[in-house]
Length: 399
Ligand code: NDP
Image 1 (cartoon, rainbow, N blue to C red):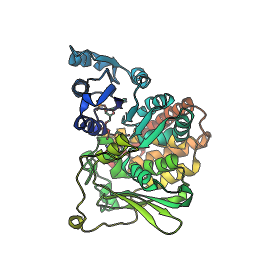
Image 2: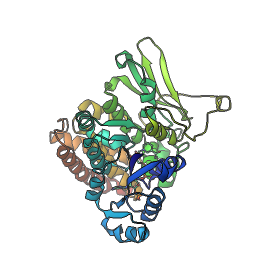
Image 3: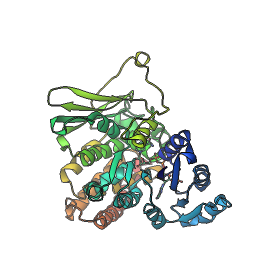
């Protein structure tokens, strides 16, 4: 029987993974080693019971007692803390879903790779912050990384059986989010409720807001570079409001392979679960005649500066991705808390990168995970200062 673990089980990707596993037979088809979550321990315990997991881990020590209560009588082991989550990745699972949100997903994913596991990678932040280390770790330990982000799963599928040397370009699509048509001045006053209302996809809060600001697409540009190794100039973004075409690969003979699918993450998760075979996945089948039109347009660099910043990060290379992601996470925290307006998130990230580049080291290739975590920490502190400076300089104008 196949053994599996889900990191970030209680999130949007975790729930979709759980749904697929339960439909495919649940505990009679899979040996569940570990499920992890953070605050939603009630749901974590429900999932652990349903899948007969060996272990359930919450990221926060203060939730351990609640988790233990919820698991009482089940025989399922409970643990807490970031160390316990990382340790859970040492347990023997053949297939590991990496679906923690943010840079917190990096260490458990890396630990799973060191044991030669198959890592279904939804946590794009791992590739953005430590792409070369992650890919090298997989190679060294004979592990497999399967992309779960819909665009990257699409590129992966479009490349199957193709000669990578014949690829001219890769195009990933962006829905354009809820503000695709909004003029710049209207974007100044965007609320969290507006930003999280994605028109096509149902996702976690943070990635939904990142989609609205295009920071999600910015992360995905870097993710494409790190996972597939294409040059920055070969990777393009096109806005496609229907979210039906997820990516296209263009070859040297002028042909393009496009991947189409419903806006349902269970397709990409199911692909990674069944790979290298194709299994039945219970998603809607596309009715192209009903959809009628597929539209494409260029992204607006002025309203969505995150894409320009991602290109600068790719040019800088080294630890710039770690700094970019950390600064974005801090800016997003402040937007969610109501301390920073929507458009200022990009300003904070840009300021952070500028301040760090002056201190050297941003473009240095990381030689270890510690280098990445050091840059992550430094960028978080620099971004927090940049937010404070922004608030001091502009607070009156904003409120
Ligand atoms: P959610 O916010 O819905 O879920 C995040 C998960 O991570 C939850 O299980 C949460 O626990 C847990 N978590 C939160 N903080 C921590 C922490 N500090 N340490 C350990 N665990 C933590 O996120 P999504 O499912 O939307 O996204 C997960 C990842 O997948 C992200 O990297 C995202 O970019 C990527 N992704 C998501 C897509 C989507 O459709 N949602 C599409 C493509 C990629 P709890 O809920 O219990 O607090």
